[in-house]
Amino acid sequence: MEDKMNKENIEEVKVLEAQISCLQAEVAELQRQKQDSHKDMAFHLRGQVQDALSYMCGQRLVGGKEKVVSRLKEGVKELEDDLKRQTQLNGISLTSCATKTLESSDSKVVQQLCVSGHCSELVFQVEFQLTEVKEGQRSERTVSDLNVVMDASDLQNFSSFLSGVEESRDLLLFFRTLRTFSDRCDERSRTFQHFQVSEKISRMWPWNKYPAVVSLPGGCRSEVMTLNHPELPGCVLFVHWSVDVSREGGVAPKINLLTKIPEKALQLFPSQTVGGAAEAFQSLLRILGPEAALESVIRAVGLSQDT
Image (cartoon, rainbow, N blue to C red; front, side):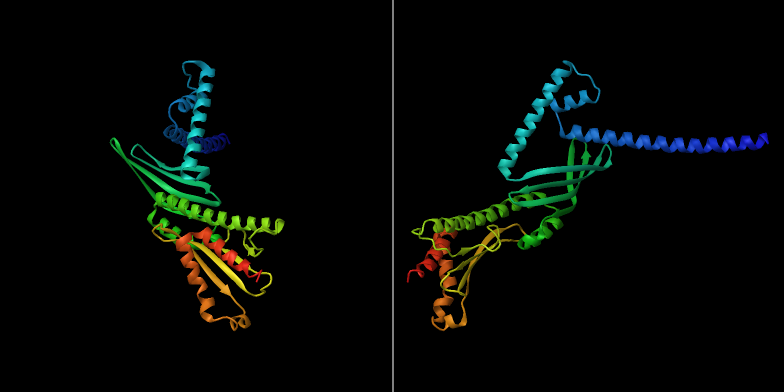
């Protein structure tokens, strides 16, 4: 009986020892992750902010708590000012950045990064792996597994470029082209909004030369403006303003004037006159630019109201 109890105790001790070993391994892994996290913070933060973090982690510094807190506030203020300057320069605002260390050694560090932000009205999320290999005093960084997420429903002309960026893993090209593309879209929005505001003014003051013909079915950030004279039902002019992006990152606005004329109306006008409207508009674009060319077309449509 006593031998049986001893065997059971020995087996129970072995089970407990195995559980202790597992817990020790788990604690060691958590400590390693904590050290990696501290390494990541130390890699990105220097000077006053790093000193403050060292104090908060239990490493006493000369000068006491008040001095460290003051340094921390100064460091945070410097980082905020630098971020504000960078946002103003490149037009890109980052809202979140998550980093996960996948591999860490003295010679190689692999991190998974997820960056979210917006450029004007365009929201993006970029995920990629960053590998840093150290050789002596030199280090080399490479990007892999790049994935860019954007609202594809409004970016048909941007999708081909995104595919090319993911293949080439060229982050700099992505952000540079995103800024240029966003600027061209903002120019279109401002121009459309200008004429929409002018239409509201014309309703308040009838002597304003703009007729009430402008409509933006998809809002001022859409690609289409319609000109529809109230006394000529069925006769519509469409201004289609797209922003094309090549796989190499070239950004070019493309503006066309399209016509929708009922068959009965076409019989009253020579076909060359109606068909030449698009070519005439392209000539105006080359000479006057988008806003002045659109204003000329709107004025021309509006004059027919007085005839």
